[in-house]
Length: 466
Image (cartoon, rainbow, N blue to C red; front, side, top):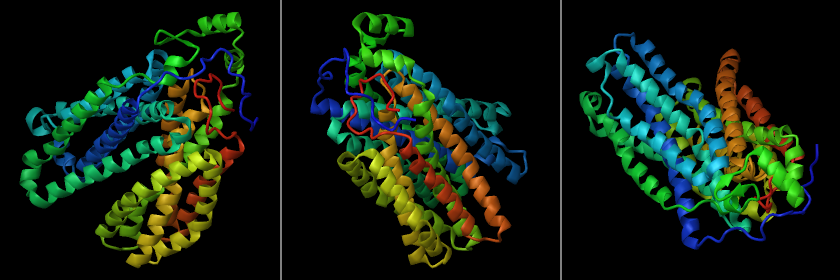
């Protein structure tokens, strides 16, 4: 498998991408940040509601334990719909442009979330209530599947070549903003409302309130110009991508070498390193952001507030980590930064896990924050740009979205389950966690051996980097 970048021949690609003003770039950055923040706010709002109130509101009549399981099952439904949405909207975005699709995805995603807040409960309409909840979760996941990948592609194609890393890192910051915002809203509601008020009407506030962010994001995207890279790509004519047959005929007529090479490339070669990059980051995220709260609370028998607080504090620290790593990726390259961060992560796994397992609050905070920021947030900063850079212009949106969602679904599905069972079998040992973190962290390192440096690529190039 080649580890060298495609040859510099640019064929018939235009000399420079369509010009965009600083205001256009700012709108693109704000659009990406808002969309990602709304996506993660939507899912966090539902996750917390599923654990706190949805069992009583939509699954009453079942045992309390079964009601919670049913509520969490509807949470999982949204993730099942994500790869389908990534495939459908990704292909559409590669055909008719990024802005049109991103307008649709955020409307679907945010609209479904708002409507959840207006749903009648099982006490009002019986079995139809959970059915409607599942439908809205499917719509929410269908739209969200192409949201973060589309935001990453859009920012990568908008940003100046030498500033792509730090600008595209705003997508990763959006995840923090959404998660923290949703957690704060629910924290306030639980603190100021009685249980009766929360069940009667309080639970609706965060869902209906998300419409404010939705309307602002829709307004921003309505004014957003199309990606200059998409407009200037040789396979696009008047804002619509040509069919494969039309592309081949045009390339042969114009002797467009890059396009002819792109048509003959083996697509799986780019999918493998991209999958490994995403799989490793998502696996570490599943263990550290999902399972570790349970490990701290149940296995280490510490207060529940310790587990939630350390995640919040670490997420706040990521507001520094993400842009710094993004800027370093611009300076030293994505491939090298992936290698550096992965090696640092491998070195730190044992000492940071020993610090966490010691169950002393100061050391636990330091260990968790360091590991979370190095092995999850730093890789997320690099990932949001590296994946779009790996793929060629013709299928960038679809390939990025499908790889992201399938790899994440597998990694975050098996990671927490495997490590939880392994820890239980070893009577609470931290060693299985360290081993699983090591396995996931090696994946991006392997990926860098299968790919060239992609920083600075002409994103109008139809060829994959591999």
